[in-house]
Length: 114
Length: 115
Image 1 (cartoon, rainbow over the protein chains, first blue to last red):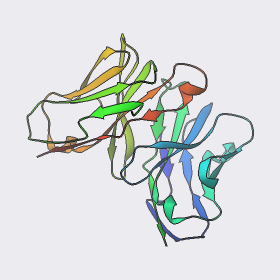
Image 2 (cartoon, rainbow over the protein chains, first blue to last red; image 1 turned 180 degrees about the vertical axis):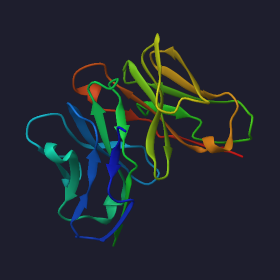
Image 3 (cartoon, rainbow over the protein chains, first blue to last red; image 1 turned 60 degrees about the horizontal axis):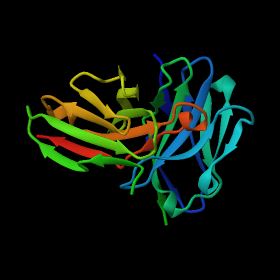
């Protein structure tokens, strides 16, 4: 079945630790890839996106993600997390031949301890 | 004012009641979506509309209906609410083409509890 998976349900880190959140998708063909973030009590906001070109994309607040086509992956990274990064992170895929709709992963909750 | 406004923000209702969640947007986007968020399941698409005359079922449309009253308004109805429809509901919009077609703008969410 077509799906988007995220490796971790809940990640707990101390401030200044490095972060990597995994995302894999099972669609073939051309995809657009996204990471959205949902801070506590807030709506989802776009963190970064990949459409084409350089597979390493940079987003807001020091986040970056790498698209590895051969692995169907789009992992999110940040070298040094802050307490304010505590949030839920959603990977999403837009498949060009799938009704132009976005499919979201189950989310990874990140808790950063001060 | 928010670009995408959802009302109500919180609602508690009883099994069998009819509920309507409303969404309005000032983005001028043609495309509107209703998602449902459940813990551990992420966001799942209920219905989407690419323009006023275009309504499409999403992944989990059973038990829901929608109405696109105008370009700016897209409402979600639960004709007879049941407890497993307890969830956080998000409305979102996107543009039709170009960069905006690939970015969703979300509302703040409507938390629905069905007792």
